[in-house]
Image (tube, rainbow, N blue to C red; front, side, top):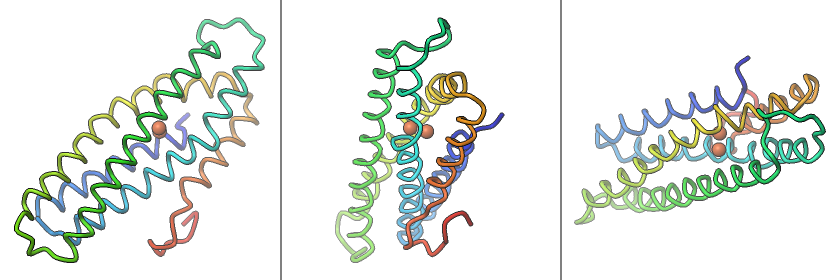
Length: 180
Ligand SMILES: [Fe+2]
Ligand SMILES: [Fe+2]
């Protein structure tokens, strides 16, 4: 069964490709807009993991009674989730800095170091892309699977629904209502 967060990874990857296409076209407005949208979608995804997925996994691990080698201990689950948290912080801080630079370049694209600053934005987003690939792989092959194994079918369906709401709740600045 495909899970909402794994599907969301694929959609967010496509948004990143749109940013790199805008970068190749050297269109500052499109570079800004595509990165702003990627940033927003990634932030919504991270929010779903922090608010719903990670607490559900930790709660279920704490109360599990069955001996099962395919399930993590509480320490393993905590360590894995802490590392994912560190990745999330890295993504958000790099993207915030890139967005700030792009906002300045939108205001004044005649600045002398325009090319250098665009290159710095590219480097930052490439570093996010690389770390995101490993991050998503760990989630899809380990952490998301823990949730599937730990939760009952009704718990899992309820969790998916809460996460689906979170990842479709776009900020108003994009002019698209939640769930559409
Ligand atoms: Fe994540
Ligand atoms: Fe994720």
